Image (cartoon, rainbow, N blue to C red; front, side, top):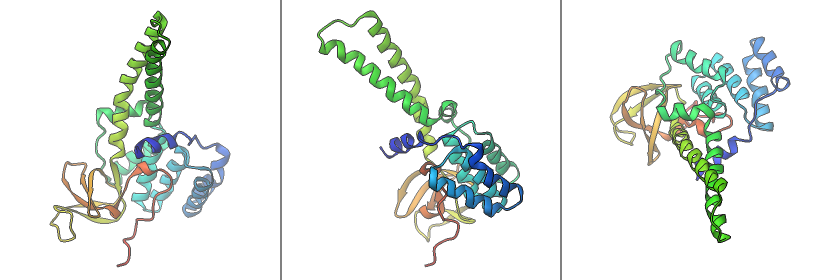
Length: 251
């Protein structure tokens, strides 16, 4: 249910206008990346996240060397707009020039990205209710369905079935998370004393499985399985600005 409401809430975010972006872009062009971030963050807090604002924020965060925050911004931008060119270019640059590792998209995630998870949710919901009402109304009226009603039900059912891979792809994408701290260890068991089996860099993207005792079981881009502390990663699915996870909390 949480995924459903997050998807539905994402529909409220639209593209940023040129006027809204001007102040941040001017600061960015002048090399004032902190100033650009402050302006775009203020816009997100006041008016909501958009793919344009998040993609721009990702660029500025990357310029400051904040790989984790940059990747969260870019990934969230693609959730809102799978075709956002700025976010796509940012992630490709992070992989090629920044050494960031990111799991390859599954066929279902590619399918979901054709329209975006939000759009697939709306389509599936609408098609489901059209098909259901098309079946129920004739029975409630105790009449045989007309030819056009039967065609409508078949069409709606077909659209619903075609939307299911998009919903599944959105679910898979929701299980991604970005490593937010500079040096983290992938552990064999979910304890502080668990054997470290690999090191994972800030900005790397992992697939999450299940949480346990403050840890999350993950799979890395190269297929390693292990546990990371929940505070070491951030899921792009949450929306909005990146959390302040860059520095571990003081004991």
